[in-house]
Image (cartoon, rainbow, N blue to C red; front, side, top):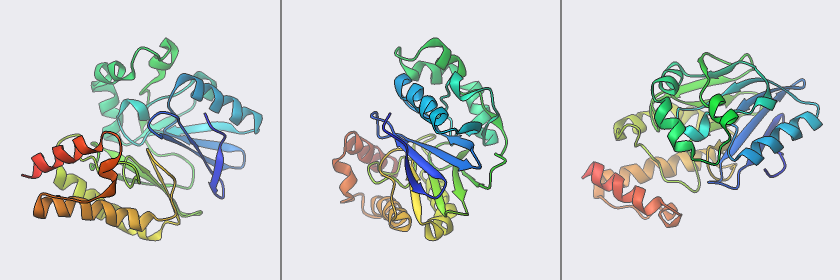
Amino acid sequence: MPALREVAPGVLVATSRVMQMNTTVVVDSGRVLLIDPGWMPDELDALAVTLRERGLTVAEGFATHAHHDHLLWHPWFGEVPRWASARTAELAVVEREALVSALGPELPAELVELMGRVDAGSPTFDVELVVHDGHAPGHTAVWLPGPRVLVAGDMLSDVELPLPFDPDDVPAYERALEILEPYARAARVVIPGHGNVGTDPFARWEADRRYIADVRRTGESDDPRRANAGMEEEYARLRELLA
């Protein structure tokens, strides 16, 4: 995993070589809230070692939603509380077989066992959980009011189009954008689940809203993210949903 980089005071990010997935590390007096750690086994190993070398102790974890790549953990992080929204925690149990299957064969058994072992609840850190059903049921953004950082989960990405497909509920995604609007306006930094950390939170919010509105209104969009890997297929799927 690339070295942790500070994106705001007390907020560090490491980006995986797979799908540009971001791990967020929130630091408070040597304690760490670890949000969506991922993705490959060697990257999780390296993250645990880096935190230890920096004298940081993982105190709690948080999963933004119940997709396999956002429910991971590593034994070196410790047996600490791992939180999620109530719906995410429920889905991590009832859909465990499918989630484990999606992990693929490269994940060691000990990491598979730890995947998805989350409870419904809130971290003790100074954060606000913003729960909605946009990208997945119970999807949660994490608002850090001090540094004004929005950890957006799988929304507000500069490389992925909006993906309102779990379930296939575009209105839920549109409602989620409404919920996120004041946070996107207030944020200095946005950390998407996949993509580049940005200082343009509200511009990304506007791009997501415009993309869905354009496809809903005209059946077309010229969003430049369509050119990225896998996105043309997702664009076609949204057009089909809204046809």
